[in-house]
Every structure is written in structure tokens, then in C-alpha cells.
Image (cartoon, rainbow, N blue to C red; front, side, top):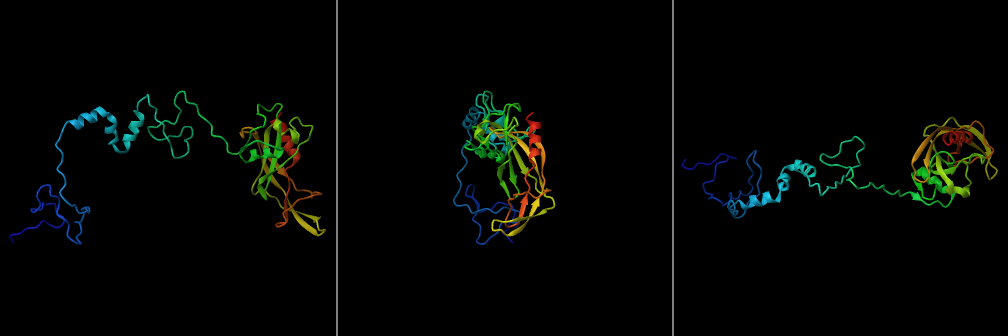
Length: 288
């Protein structure tokens, strides 16, 4: 045959296409050759390339190495940060949490403050100005007491202690200490307090319940499960919320039924309170 055609998907030029007229429009319903990328049809002839000139090269050299570096994919960004002008320090913003000491950060970046720049501490959104002594329990939830006394050491420090409850883990009740203790402070003198001890219930520490018999407010006989458990005591600076010490484990014994008890009417259970003698012993040791 006089006519010859390139094989399907071949690369031979089409004799009907003149230079700069673009490839022929694909046929209706046609598919690209196997292994060849699909191309959208082109309409009209593309513009011929501009004549080569040294003007663009000169401008590129005058603009500096930044343009050339940016053409190097991901590595270009790292080179810019490392080789930037010393007069214009680069501020790097990271999307993730700050790396800890010894952790490697983003290549080519420096998270340390520039000379003369001071690090600022983020304000605590849970900081409050106390109006009552019970407000100091906010420290046990990660807060700060703005009008509390600053903690300068154990000598002469005044302290309050608070305890949560398994039924209400975010409710903190005051645990009183003997008034003859040097760290004792009246409820009206809460602004003199610099130390807050937080007694947190230890999950899964409950002992076997003790059955205690009582009469409710209506005179009906009820049986209450009185349960022992354990708490961890942690000391914090009231003004800053900073942890300053550990008081160890405090037991909440339920060996004897108390003369008065508060209980959960749904579960008919009551958890024993942390032992006050153990709390005072821990305070004596920490604030001596």
C-alpha cells in the first residue's frame, strides 16, 4: 500500500501538521496510546518562543540567589532560612507543639529567641482573684490565685488543703487542720495563704464496703456502703499554680461507721474522707 501510518501510540510526526500549528485534534471518542499520558485538545497554534536574550539572565543575577534557590524544590526553602540576611532574622511559625529539650526541629530553623528578645509566658486563663477561702481550690484544677501570697519557701508559709470525691471528681472540699499548726490560716485570712495541698482520689483504690445502718431524714432505716480508698497529696504554689512538692499517699479509712454520713441516694454508697492526721503529718514534713 502507498499510504503508511505510524503504529498505535507511536511517536512519528504527522505529515499533515506544519510547524507551530499544534498537534491534530483527537478524534471523537479516541483514547491515548497505552503508556502515553492523556492530553486535552489544543485550540489554535501556540505562540512561537521569544528570541533568546541576555537581558533576563542579567536581571536574574541582579535579583540575587534567592530566585535560583527557590527553583530547587523543598531544599530551596531550607537554604533560604539558613542563608538569609543577618540583618533580617526570620521568624518561623510551627503548626505542632514546641519540641522539647534535645528534640530536633524543622531543618534549617531555629526556635531560640533572637538576641535581645525575651520569652513571654502565656497568661493562665484559669487565674482568678479569690473572694473566699474556697476559691483557692481553683489551684487543684490548674488555676492560679492572683491575690494569694507568693511562695518563698516552707518557713512561715500558710497552707490550705482540698480533697475531691469519686462521685464528684471536680468538686473540691476543704480539709481543715489543727489551729495550733504554724501553717494554719483562718478562712478570712485566705490572702496570706501561699501553699495549696490537693488530695486527688486514686481510681480503683476502693476497699470492701462496710455496711452501716442509719435513719434517713424521714426516719426510714437505710443501709449505706461505707468505702475506704486512697488519695495522692500534691503541693502547689497558690499564686503561680506551680507544683512545689509531693505529700505522698493519704489513706481514707472506713474501719468504723461515722456518727454522721453523707451518701449517694442512687448508689447508697459513701466514700470515707482522707485521714486528717495523715494530712497534718504530710504538711508538717513539707513545711518544716
